[in-house]
Length: 179
Image (cartoon, rainbow, N blue to C red; front, top):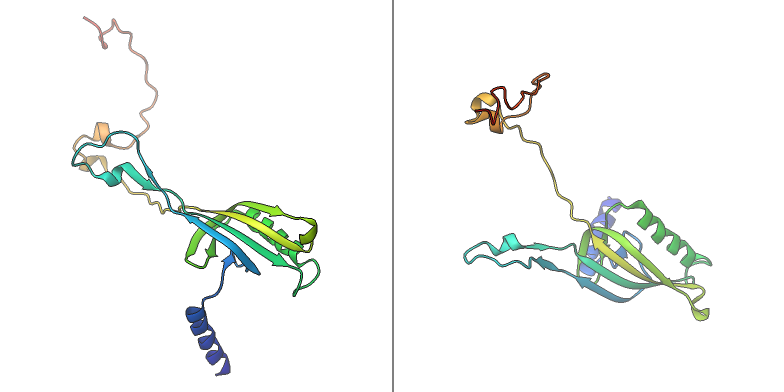
């Protein structure tokens, strides 16, 4: 019974307070800046009056940039190195993950870039600029074209079948171009 109560309280607090920022489950100690970009690609050629404009524009993958930090202080010596290794491993997996920022949750993201800067004063900290990009995932299906008997012009629109070997017909022997 106690486990159920703890689970419900935990779920409610996550909804009310939020689960915090994360990059594929890796939670930063501090987030300095978050930038996101939602873009639409619009074709350059003219659009005929009355045509569907949506046919001439498509949504680009969402991009998000996070400047984050982790510190050995409050954790253990080597914590920042471990986080850096975890970020590189996340990138190397090339599997979509979820990113949570202060404004939005992004699904199907990949870590396009990890930029680390270190100075003498930040040797035991990790300051990272993570470049994240959405992978647009679509579903596909195979549809049968039906049998040749149900098609109006089966020779032109039907499936391919093995016709065996054929011999070329010289153009003067009753083929195309003969008189």
